Amino acid sequence: MPDQLITLPGMRMERLRRDIPEEMPFQHFHSHYELYYLWEGQRKYFINNKVYEIKAGAIIFIAPGNIHRTSWIGECAHERTLLEIDETRYRSLLDRLQGISLEALEEQNALVLQLESSDRARAEWLLTDLFNEAEAKRTAYSEYVLLRLEELLLLLLRMQSGLNIPAVDSEKHRKIYEIAGYISKSYSEIKSLNQLCGRYYMSKSHLCHIFKEVTGMTVQEYITVTRIKNARQLLAETKQPVTAVACAVGYSGITHFERMFKKHMGMTPLQYRASNRIKQQRA
Image (tube, rainbow, N blue to C red; front, side, top):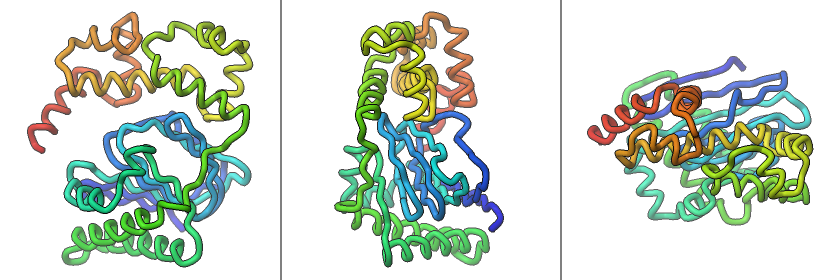
């Protein structure tokens, strides 16, 4: 089927198929909820220091602010649906679901579930109907889409016990999880790859090779995106000058920090701070 991309107020919906190897251009995080469904194929999904190998019928619901990246494994052909759900616009819906049970999402940062039989059929019907309605834009279509989204999330929340896909577990993966966890906490103190290599008694070539193999990204890419994620929070929640924010997340120079921030966020630190204030005023 041809790719579908539909944008609604507070939601972006995308369904695509790829028959050649495809990886996200770089790992990212964002301020919205993300729902990912794999119709066909296999993918490797890195979420907050852990790796999950998923197959057709897997559905993932990621909370805002979590670093993640997908890459290919096995057969490269795959088809997936992605929903990006604005936290502010759908706050009332998410609050209602919080009353049912979003504890797992808050504690684990993501639900990673394998749907089977009738549950899988139901989820696929809901996703298809949701897309069809959003595309047709009949009377009251936005309310209809909201109802279908709520039904889909309720289905996930009712199934979250017992259907979780575990993170890949091997000696190599456990070592990389440990290193990624250290980076996520000590990002501002890491001055070089040699520092990490010394801490974990590994050569630079070996560390770089297995980190890329396991996570789909380089060590430096992960350090950078972790720093930018935390810089974004400081810019939004404090009045610290940009130079102080850069220093707090581990950058010795403002120019490099601003370049990396714009690469990942699409705007300068000052522009991000200003746009965040506008969003807070509208909320």
